[in-house]
Length: 292
Image (tube, one colour):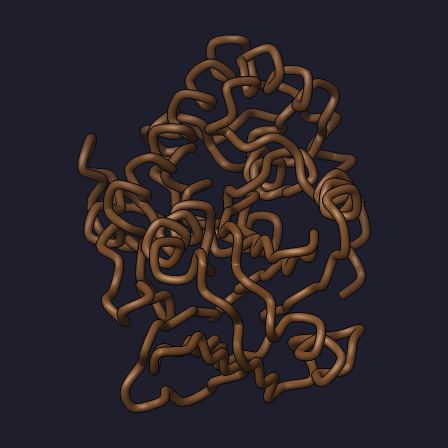
């Protein structure tokens, strides 16, 4: 899934190519992409408008169009935005003509991506306020802020990092990498992090995201740059996707487990498993399984 570094890479590459251009024709080929609007409704609202800015919030691409019109695009699991692809890729869900022979293809094999229309800055701000917390790269994302978010939380720290309403932009890849760098087991309850652990986790989350940006994202399955090139951060993974390999720090075999419903990679020597009291273990063992 494109996470903050992948979406930031797209913005940096795509903005110089589209800002100042007009969306001359928009063709939405998959009705799921434009819900709740019909494809024709969303296309009519977009085409003919000049792109004034292209930005990012969390994992969202934010298109700022003239007359205070905004398109908020989420790539979800397998989305990509390609500039002047030749030939047209499989699984193209949206075509956009930019004039002078240029075009965009929004590609999404699994069809989870979305585009949502917002008709004012106020609507845009309300949209994100309801969905996203601060990003780790925000200067307001201090140790105190992170400790406040974690306080009283019984959920595993991995689930805490993935909760976009609390911390925007971190997904499965960068959560695994940040927790390894911080020496924190993904099952540790977020509310039981010490001050020192919170400080390390803040630092390593920022470092992992910045490393991903510097490597222009990670390509595991479908993520591509706007010119179709793969990212390279996957070549720097310390634990993610390295099940069965030796840890680069201690040599212990990296294991895979499921935390918060996501495949999670961990070195249980560098990231010691948390100890639970017998009473808590008894309660956990009697707890019925969650409904599926």
